[in-house]
View: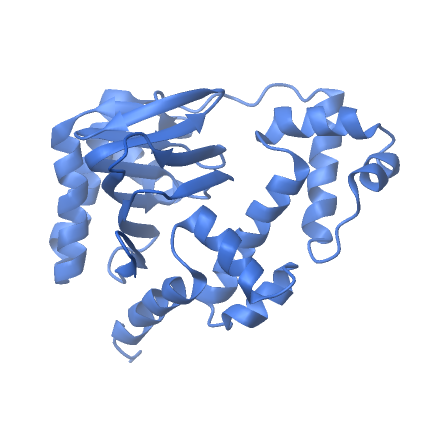
Length: 284
């Protein structure tokens, strides 16, 4: 685990558990800024309390509870008590969760979690057992326990994700703004320029973008840059090169934002990815 004094974290993958990220961490002063994940978040709290802002309200997850966040849902994270919180988390991809839901539940549309906090000490133990099995290289146990845990959580707290409402004019403008920011990630326009190009005012764009994506454009852009940096790091790009490629001024800027969103520095993140690659047997 990367050690930060009284705080420590390890963010890794297990080659025999494809489509799933893994995390084990202890945080005290750590604050996660508003961000999203492409995967589901299933965070099992072992000690302490985590507070995370989710859909307009603070949610509290203590020992024996799980913090559950659907993909592309903005949220934050911080300690809810002075001693912080210790937890283990699995981040299964939407494809993994959909496959499990189709086999083991009656959810037929895109599955998701209904409530962001679930008190279930048994499921908490299952998540930590998945992490332990991955650490020990026990592929059969890791895969089995993950499927049991996801099935249980979907049966207790699952349902189809809401269908997207018919897009309003504001939502369409927000989507166009997002596309521009994705295309011009390295050299983004100002809010005033972006709004003018889209035929709206800065405050109208700010309001519609926040309504659509749960955060203002500049925060969304930082989140998107970190996402893209993660993919580059996974592919072997050096952190300094990844920083410039996604639009950060230099590696220290990437380090700061990456740690505030992912929970570990990019160097530690990439080392764990490299360990997975090195552990894979050569192709026949």
